[in-house]
Length: 111
Image: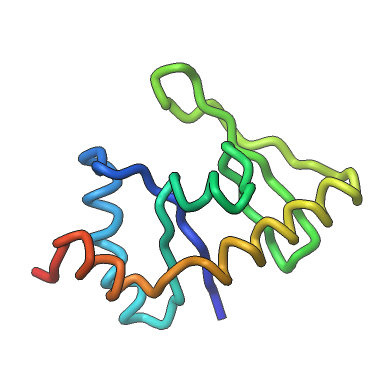
């Protein structure tokens, strides 16, 4: 199973609104996507950077420039940092809500 928790700013950028709208299709294909707002993420102590965890063992931290252009990913091998990011992932998951509920709350519907 493939799952992810997404942290988004509200109001949405055009890109975030499109991503939320488009995620209905990956959810329909079996992906479990949960959302929380950036304000919620800050309140529960999540970091202010994007990252991916693969099988809870491989950490890739994403880097962006000051205009939010993607610069690339950095593989992190430090075990303590990987454990910390697993903790943050689990905290995000506990506080995030399912894609359909979040989209309804934010007024982003289906096609």
